Length: 145
Image (cartoon, one colour):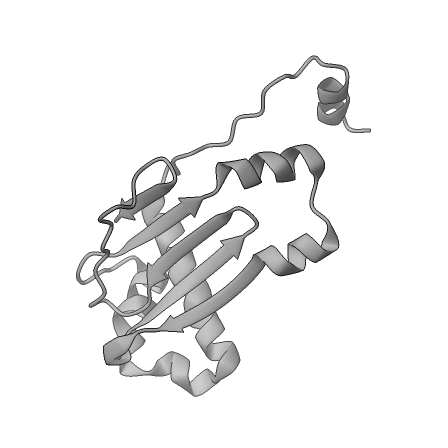
């Protein structure tokens, strides 16, 4: 067993802390946008080069941005605790991990990443602005970059 696991089992470690706020949210946002464009390309490679994604591709590749980019993070901490203490079954993994592009009205698109207890949304088209009314911290966190 690795030393960390041994320390947890022996009771030497009684807390595990997860970083709640990324040190460089602009880099996280760029990576999420890159992932979203790749999901678009996996469906249809030509669609990834549509003009509506120009701003997203430029920001993801170079860091040059037009407009305000952002991502919204939604955490279910009771689920995080359960996965950390009980592990993740193969069925839970396949049910709770996904990457998808959501089409909105007006030809707008968003990327959604689901990782077990964490949902992250970021726009792939620059015109989408977040509506966070009623989405309170700590369950929801909006990162404007």
